[in-house]
Figure (cartoon, one colour):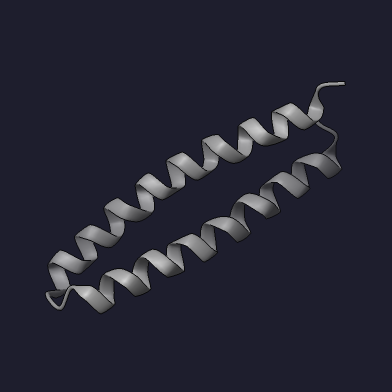
Length: 68
């Protein structure tokens, strides 16, 4: 089981990586797609997929750190 400190580190890591990736996805989408509705849709889908993959990957990495 994680300590409170480990949980905070995991959440901060996940949030920082998520914000960085979401910014890049949004910037790239808005730069490449001029139609507002399409770019918004692509951004939402891209950020959702990014969130799911990132959350799973980071959770697995931190779970490995917990094992003795």
